[in-house]
Length: 409
Image 1 (spheres, one colour):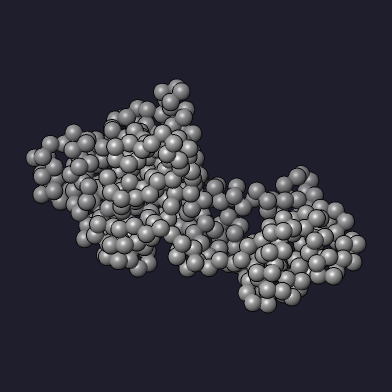
Image 2 (tube, rainbow, N blue to C red):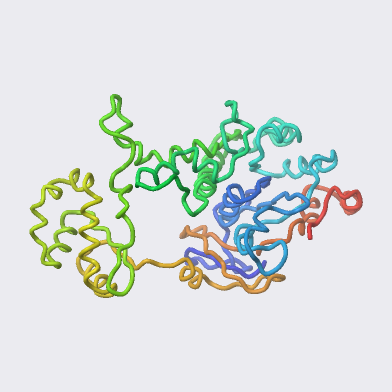
């Protein structure tokens, strides 16, 4: 057990190792994913207590090289994304590598992959192959496009899916050129969807004993995500308006300048607007037709937010924070990425040294999330993983000598 953090309460006390079992303790996840979407999903499952075994190729997962890091093969991204996982390096194109994967899969409750249908089939690791060794397996296949379309094997990354799911058009509706969100939203939203789908399938299996195949196409995930509010008046048939939700699309929906910094204030109700306008000596705005109803306030968000920005520019950030807290108006100082990083707790990786851990965001009162393992080097746990799958010492040595199992770096 390596040092880590645990969220939740310990009213019943921790076990001998200092950790209480997570909700997914006893569940084994075989992770054949790469980059961020899949690894983010399996990181969350690992934080919830699952034993996650990640299968990597000779170069190691792409996220190991995403940005700088303290040592080769461990980027700042991978130090958190690869935590709570054991790593094995396998040549899946070699018959013995495929066989090793299947033997590990026979011990797994969940298999997750983001390989496209074509490559997965050519490797002989599709759902039917895995079900042949574990008939109640929960098999989750996440890729860019649905497998029953002509785009099934089209390459898809976050940038591609953002553009294909209307994200770029949201910037056009704000009066800008088509742009992408400056975060890998498609990867991470799809990752969260993978987690919820797997948990639902595990629940179904616990009540029926039946496994199943899950498909999570990124494009479908992001379309449903974007259209929650932006389907708007285009959803009814016949349409009652256009696509796009006005309050979200206004260019003035952003942090506002104060006399000494930036603040984000969201007057959401008539009471909020009344407090702000009266504090600025502009109570006459309350009689403006734009303020008449909730619908009119939403429709006129752009100009109303401009009025709010003008008001906020008259005082300091601290003054407005005090005022908003007293009046119950949602508000926050604009926080930088670096400020968030600086607030993270420190941990000590056995080879990479000190680093900041991103705490699990969920808090359970009985089965807390935890960080039990630091991110491994690519392939460092191969012998242990194969031993768990029933390989003896000689068989493991043979795979190493044949370069079927390897450690990167």
